[in-house]
Length: 379
Ligand code: NAD
Image (tube, rainbow, N blue to C red; front, top):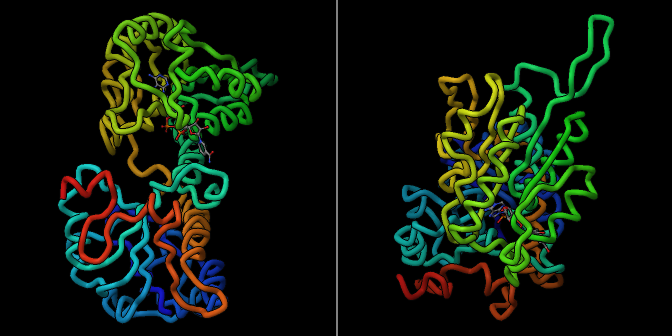
């Protein structure tokens, strides 16, 4: 059983799919692990550390991939990489398939079984495999660090001989995994924190972290959470009431961090150009939803925009990748926990149970066809 880890090919990707720790664990399951030279460098992992863990170093992606049964990736293989994947191999990573149906079809044509880690069901058994949570948690932390770095003042209140520095006011919009970590981080750094969401369950979570909750709590709010635990898209009327409530609050904030997402829909627009204009010079918005269209009307993907009134709008891409050593370490553990379930430990060989709900939920392609229900019809 051979596992291949080619280097990520997208220039901006700093993460890597295995760490020396997970290499050791895979070897413990009877696998040979081939890692392309330099694959871990952006995450601070040297070739020597992989080698010391028992991995074989490969001089090229092709050399790593030769004869592989399992290919571990952070991102979906690029078109240029697909031809090099061994037919019949399992390819596991964040596949980001929506809007990339042609690439999913190409993976099927290459006769690999591609698994999308982000489709892992959010059930107790799969918590350890939940890449959305492991990465969103770090993004929430990093958003506060990035916001603090752009903010020209200190976050905690300081009483010094030279005078008192007031605590910064930070507002978190969207309290899922990323937002909760942003609240906790901002509180630890001494800010005065408020937060909003449309799901009623978040009120108690916000308050338990010592922040103040602010939301339009009408009848629609009471029904805003889907059975899956996600937010619904709110009506135009609700959005107008929400904007009215948050506008005066945003005007008083030093840092606003937005994380609001709705599954399968563009990110809701929560901060208008007029709201940005109402903010004080030097204040900062960090838009974590920028890759899904942005929560702030003026956010630009991959840029830090400074507006005419001196507000900075941070739109970094791949925020978990801005903490590559930590995000790789957690991502690699998520991958190991899943891939372990595809291996027969006694026989030390691949043994995929195609009826397992985790396999069914994540498998996009198999035996030359697109099999995932969300994509099969379109292919
Ligand atoms: P997400 O990334 O889809 O969305 C982020 C947040 O934005 C959500 O809290 C959502 O309610 C909020 N939002 C959406 N529209 C909004 C609007 N118009 N205004 C303000 N906020 C808005 O969410 P997530 O972080 O993936 O978490 C979704 C749910 O999944 C949560 O209930 C979370 O507790 C749950 N979860 C469960 C597990 C598990 O059981 N294994 C693991 C992780 C998350």
